[in-house]
Image (cartoon, rainbow, N blue to C red; front, side):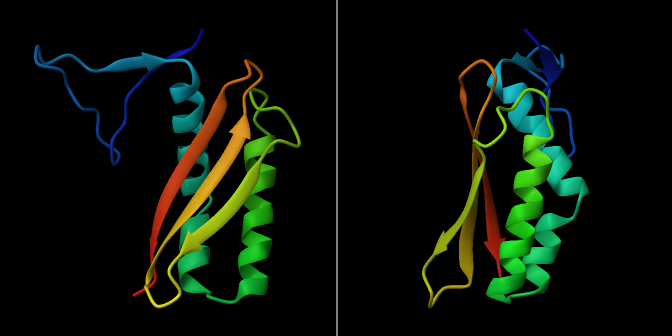
Length: 113
């Protein structure tokens, strides 16, 4: 089982004793995928271009990036954006299954204002 340091907004939070927080399991994969998606600037692309056609292209890029991870079962990734049409706040949800059978879920808040 993999172990990793917890990262929150690029920082390493510490426990009550001042030690870094470690975690394992599907959270390791989720954090790794979240970082990969962030590094590829996919969220910037979505917020910067509101064209539904271009959003679909970015969703496909996200799916491809997620499914390239050897810990993810190919063909299990889905990307959906949901929100209120009158609102500028939407959420992007990325779902996939790990090779261990765990459901992976990444949620990004998109603020279009």
